[in-house]
Length: 327
Image 1 (cartoon, helix red, strand yellow):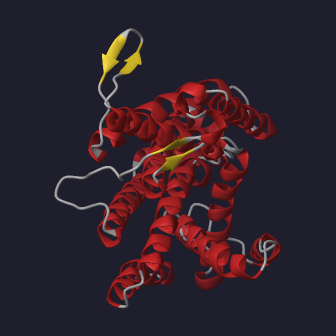
Image 2 (image 1 turned 135 degrees about the vertical axis):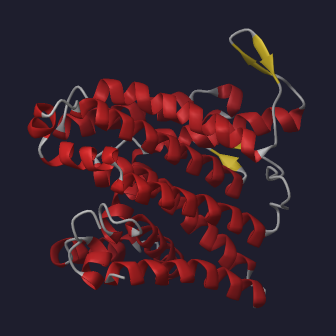
């Protein structure tokens, strides 16, 4: 096993051991903190498919995170108020079932990613960044003016949604559910990296002309990756909304999109566990340094600066060296 493989195994062990220790020590807040890190890591893992493998720097990925969150918020809102959801002249009931909400969140955010990608991938470089940012701001201001679902105040959900066989109100059970989803996405990403599609996508990032010369369309490859990336991020948004039992326009903010990118750069771009390590470091610094000063972002910025200057490949690159081809 490579050094990166051992590091990934250590991170996986920590994801299991820390909440288990918190359960034994009766520290439910630590479990909630770990759940937040896992869900943010899931969102960044979704972006890593587009950014890490496909080279698509999206500054609007919070759109899909917010759509997943609002899919949960709207369905649960109608379920708790016993009012039907009126959609294109059809009355639909709300639901508190997580599997149904996840399906809706993935479909809605995946469709949005497909449409946005279809338009944004007509450009590249800084223009692609600006178009994705523009879509993010459009959704942000639309959600602020959406009075039916709280407008700027957002929507509160009184009771966390349910999953068959689990009591999601118990912190350790909800954490285990989120961790299982994250591991499933990481397994999918690992398979994707080694698949012919992943190799072609990687080649399209490095030499699109050569990919086109062998009969493949780089734009279609990137569009498929962007759609899959948006769907995964939407799923993370639904879980994040369930964690807080609250959705608001801030889930669409461009600052959140920037944080997802920072998680990947800090942990290691195109590294399987890069988003996990980046999100964990962010949540830990936010918690510990945030208690000392409201300007804790300065120290986080200095860390990011140091990793960027001296650690090509992020924290994983610093600890294990350069990535092997297709490793």
